Image 1 (cartoon, rainbow, N blue to C red):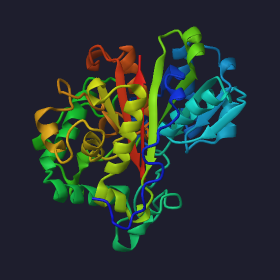
Image 2: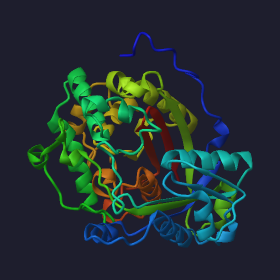
Image 3: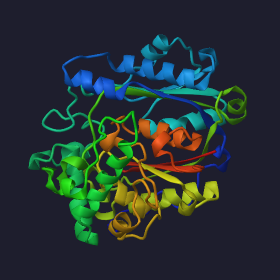
Image 4: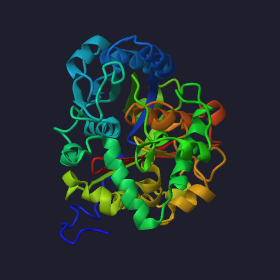
Length: 402
């Protein structure tokens, strides 16, 4: 339900410029050794810093693309990385650049290419969050200056993002009769995928009973509902479509469609998350991306969902039309999102089991599934992958295609 006091959503019914459809393609992807660095940082070592992780991922992506770094004339870095210094260290001199999170980096790269500001854009993310002890909760929690919802509830003891998503889940359970066992299907499915992924940190399979027996971190969220916290880096190289077809050593993976819709009214107090569960924004974005792509949910072979907490997945299933509103629990139980399920979702293991790269690693999985490079977890004849990010009132989606 939408608050009666909420103003009409701006731009409702309008669509992004259809010219961005297949205007650009991914020609290279790379990442650091998440598993090795997880072990080293837990042993008290500090292999490198955020810049070093970004550099390592970029070198891997450059090798994957097969192009020379001199061809790169655009650079977007993650929020945890210094733009000027990273460009120096990478040995590139971009004529255009920016700083953004994972999904907005892809959108901005496409916009820059379509506008003529750049032809080949490197997207580079590095984060040493584990080794430097980044606080995502408590009195020194990061992010409050940018997202006031993180500190709005602090006087009542809710100082972590987990606590905020626990509120969302509690409200969602009450609204739709959703159960903890149904939510457990998400963690179980993603651990089944990660068990097939040599790059995943957590590979031991779990059952719903294991999930239910795990401790609460912030009730009703269990330990297995939370993302990992680890160091690492990710990089992508995106090129203008005609250039991508000439330069890459692998078939390009096209950005088929993209869309965004924000819920800002009441966002500081979490109202959109607690009353609408992102639904209006997700539905608006679904119309944008599926209309632009000329496809629908039934045409998607894989669904990738930003999953800092498992509750993102059922909300996205409903918001983007993969099941009816209020029926995500039934979908998870009867149709399934794990190996052999109706809708393969977070096929790398996602943030819960593979690595917490704040949405960046999901982009790599989109590309590799379409390329057919995922080995034991490969979805057969994967042609279209839908990525969804619903964070801090922003709903953003990308459809990747062959």
